[in-house]
Length: 298
Image (cartoon, rainbow, N blue to C red):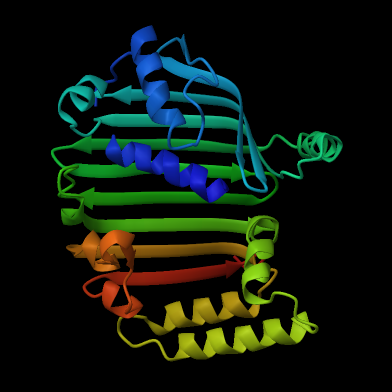
């Protein structure tokens, strides 16, 4: 669910220089834009104007067995009028979230209460997002997600030829993702991955060892020069450390000639778009580098 929230905020930035001050009216209108991708009823909370930003507090998002609590969500949108009139991209989006807690939803009030109380022993997750647009060029200038402990995610993205009327024409110029993990993987990714890949195995350690060996063999077979030996070495070391990786992982993609976003997926008709069947072909024309610095070895 955390990924859904971040994707929704990033999607808002992409569907969305001098700051235009928000008003009571624009807060009300933009709350509908913010609440919909988060799966919140538009009348669940009232967006209020505070200074130059809109703010909503005490939000609860439930999706299946996951509960997400958000103490405070604040946003500023520039270019809202043009978006509403002609569907133009927003000029600037700034979003911050404070006190975000990702919890299991048991459906039992007493257990949900206890888990929320335990989660609030920490400050929760915070999110800071800034995206700008000018003449079809979109920059995700900042996406910083700060987790309790020594855990964080940082991302930047550069897109050109962005046109809401022709989204398949979008071109990726650069993307950088940096993950600092010392418990982040185990807390948020291990359980769903274990359910998917291991299931009810009688010998999970042997199953993990088998999956590690298969992954490392696949990494060693990645072609040069698309995957430099330093990238393969970093990926190998990362998988060797599973399921307890600790350190800084950096994925950096640079496409000076542009990487068409349509190259990353295939048209599946009524099913929409699916990931491309040949993952290596999707990166043709781009330079991808992966680095992994183990905790304590930087």
